[in-house]
Amino acid sequence: MEIFLSTIHLEYMKMRRRFGKSLEDRANELAAESSAYKWDTNIASILRREIVLTAEQLEQIKFLTKDQMRRLLRQECDINTAIKSYQLSIPWYTSSHFPEEQELRKRLFDIEKERRKLTTQYHDKRRTLEDRLLSLINKHEQLDI
Image 1 (cartoon, helix red, strand yellow):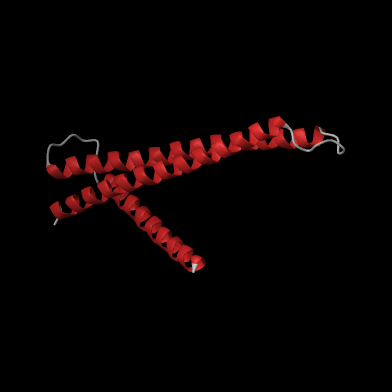
Image 2: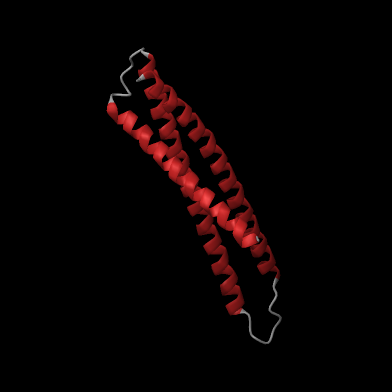
């Protein structure tokens, strides 16, 4: 039962990613159609500028999140290297537990907690911006009829 539910969840996430990608592609098309940086006061130009801004915000969030995840991965690798070096430096006939390892493992746990928090925040922000982008694109297309 659990495998079935996780398969459904994965399919839903794939569909959501595809829709989000097509939404971003449409926003980029609208931005490329005309000069979004031209400060016309008509409603279509205003909507195009908002679409461009929202698409740029999506890109910034992606970039910042990837950068933060890389930083966390680097810290995790450094900690794992430190744990391994401690383990290799201890003679085989002594106790294999040392207090530094417990502290390093706690730091690994904190990094994983931070990664989960960042992932949740990223998806929440992305969902909000995608909803806004969809709304703006729909309004723009209603004007172009």
